Image: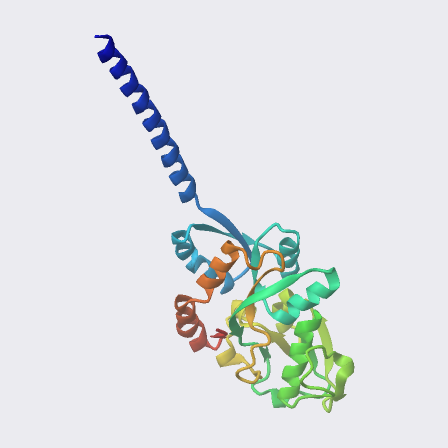
Length: 276
């Protein structure tokens, strides 16, 4: 009888040990299944649309994508630089480099996604060649987009720049201004308001679409095809650019799914073309 009791006690102890081990294994499995949150700052369509589009793809890879909405472009870079987010998606490389220089930051463009079709718009003109003498032209106030606007006017033969290939030109680099154009610097997010007040205004399709305008129907000047210098890119920091979760976002954005969206939804309207 004692042997039987001893055997039962040993068996019970063994079962308790196995149950405990099994419980630990299940806990570990559950921990592995817990999604890792990756935060990406952005503020408007189509960037936010693309991020929404890849949420499920990232979830399958074990990542929970949190889109952190910001009010402007500088805030998105400040948040990234301060490690409040893992990446951001709204800007081109020249804008990022300007931020780095001014703030001693180390942001890195890790994947170009699309080329936005910028242009000039006018409430009164049908052709940019019809600009009147002394016309007031609204251009972005930030240096990189200001340079982009001036390069575009040079390409349209409205002005002549000393170096049309430079990405750092200012009004001081205008060699010839035959129509004596006046240039008014306006914050990028306020260019829509300038459309109603100025003779000509530079703008991005994302913003100008809020006025019911599109590059293909209303744009008066365009950049050369194939130039991806100003491609809207996924940006991270030097210290986290190789992190698995950042690389997962990079892979999801640079996918056929996103490329198809750009080609089918944005390109036909003249809004953008893929940059990968």
